[in-house]
Image (cartoon, rainbow, N blue to C red; front, side, top):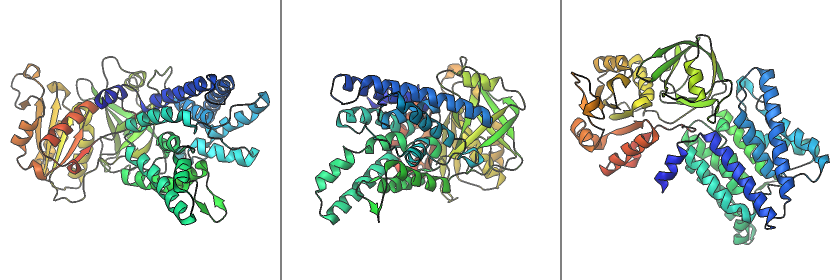
Length: 506
């Protein structure tokens, strides 16, 4: 079942999935209210949601034009739908100015409170806090009602599965529950009542799945995300008071955002295309010139925004791993352009020198250990070769030798990319590269590499000491999962397997 769910999740972007789930939650709430299971007016609820969507969309479009950046339409929809789920539906038309202000505050936070084009705070949380200060209004978090719990749980689990943020969300929930238990016992309160208040009667799960996971304000690496989840979970706990100060869910989020900002890259980059190169059958390199080397760890990714007319359902944002090394005076991303590309990739292919893209949200843990004595294996399928080009080029630049083998699989020989870098690395730092094509029918005359898929037999033949190696897997999600199953069946410990993943892949 999980395999089928993952297969479906791989067909939709992270942002579009979030929109779908939020719409589903609103529909569920309207249906429950119409059936008198919840005490909301379904028409007021849907009107409030529609008004907030329109107000956020208009504010976002205007602010994007003023600040001269591409408008992320899906982001405005997500913000509006979350607001509709946490504020009380309007009681009359007199509430419309307050709702409009809430929408404007949320959208403005992405542009005004955004030094170096990187916004610091979760827009929903900041807007809610400012709304309370300006109008003495607060979110009611009405969706934290028992009838909504199954819908929030199922939809939220899809979100965290898509983003691979299960550990962070679980840490947040565990921290909130743990601090509630400790404080309840210390105060002599009924523990079960306190737990019910935290888990069922508060927006704990919705917060963990939909607010905490907001991608732009996340810390860049998994360990920092775990700390972020723990910190925010502790502050979220309803039982926690610091003197006379009691945190609301939104104020707890703002403190977490400050931590995230402190440990993250501080700015987005506006990069101009220097050139594009056709490096494989359907693979292109997009190369951007920079004044000085970009600071990142080889193997990390960034979110790339490309404004273009009439974006399709996949939107105007993608996550791409850098193919360049941190020492190069250019930023390079390798992109597979299928025969029928999305509007985004079609716009990329049409880019000319001087076209700008916005790059931000540097993140990722797909990085090699500092211990140069640790033997490594890279396994790549298709365009999954890009992080390995970055890592290997960096090793070349630093003249660092490693015990390193690359297994690189493609369907056709003309899909193989970056052979110049890998051949140079074989001469200078001892890299072993095994190219394999998935079938004999795809092999050109004189093919000297391997044939067949990367399987246990190939790994055992080429890497007899595989049990002591660290494995790095990169490629389409289904292929990476297949590589992982093969290694686990061979007895490789899960702690020795690293997978390249960036949210929003579709």
